[in-house]
Image (cartoon, rainbow, N blue to C red):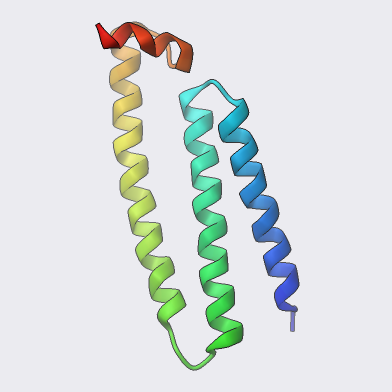
Length: 102
C-alpha cells in the first residue's frame, strides 16, 4: 500500500507547477492548463484524505466528481472566451487584452 505522504507530495508538486505556470505564462491557453493542474491537485487531496481518514465513507469521492464537473464547465467557458478573443484581435496573449477594454 502506498503511503499518504507520496500522494501529498505529488499533489504539492502539481499545485506549485500550476501556480508557477499561471504566474509566468502570458498565453491564455497555458494559463488555463495551469489552472487545471491546480484543480487536479485539489482533487487528489480530496480522494487521499477521504481514503486514509474515512475509508468507509465516500464524501471525498463525491467532492472530487463535483470538482471535475465544475472544472469541465469552467474549461468550456474559458475556451469559448479565448476563441472569441482570438476572433476579435487575432492574438491570445495577455498583454494584448487591453485592446478589448475600449
